[in-house]
Image (cartoon, rainbow, N blue to C red; front, side, top):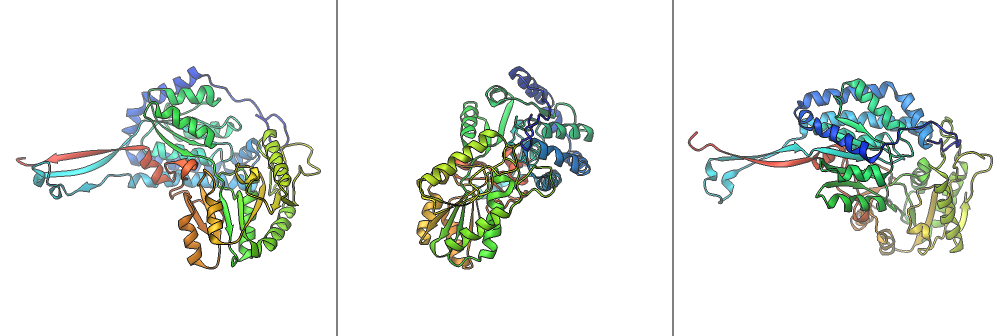
Length: 466
């Protein structure tokens, strides 16, 4: 594994074979009934114990995240804090994972409903495969592991090959917290061998994945052959819409966070800035000024605001998108190159492009890099058309003082979440999160994920003559 900030080798992780991946599923399946039978309050106690261990290891986990995937250390600490909260929330949600009752006598058929009682329960679905991304190696993997364990399912986790050490350390914390052997298994390796083996195994029942749309589609197709459930959190081209009456002193700082937080390597990053003609010039200049002022540097430096990209290929992809936009007559206002003075690592300067045309690749391809392309529009209908003119629909942001117009856009933009006067990156760990169209299937968020990870069973009781 290589540190994206320095290019230096961090260490080597054990690479699993397909046979070892299948053995991990066998281990999980062997304890499936036993773990499902553990009382909910005991599962909650264990999850809280894990959360406390993560809390005590906050700095160590944060430094590991920063070193593995190049996340600025201040942001890595926030990721650890959020993961702690995810396990605590999962423990609490166990109390709410129930069914519901139905008035049997409200149904004419079948006969005899006057003496029946009907209710549902939720059973664990079985072995869950959790496939995590590189950009949140702890928190997004935890968004899969925590609800699965809380719902009574054993897990086989396949962390990103770009940063597996965080997941392996998480597994150590689980073992120290008292999680029985076999309930959580971590395997590291490529999707073509390890991932496929996990999906194909007859004992896995659900695959939860965060990553690119192309990979997610492949997982859905493969899982569908075996009638397995999937939760897919995939790509996005999240629009950040600025209307003519927007408060720019609010919109511009939000744009900085949305475009350049973790170097734009976030599925919910603001990737297309749709700005009304009348304010586009002021917005673009202000955003460019702030972009130039951001401190680009190694992830472990306390003052770093924008760290490296995950690898050299990511830098080259961003370079290609910027070159293409400029070839389509976009104006470069900030960045547009690798920063001077940082010879090591995968760095790219925060970049602002104005007057970007819709034909440019950066308007249609997810950059996953620190680029803010500004596309100008003249009226609300045009803004909605551009916002919806992609196969994606993850999140969107609308900045306006006129809530009536804001609500109109919130209704018409096709996305899993729309935020008025807040950046696209907003997410509540306890609430439903996911996309529409090719941005996702199913929903994360602790309660909603636990519902996806359970099967509803109807039970009827005929008490006539008892």
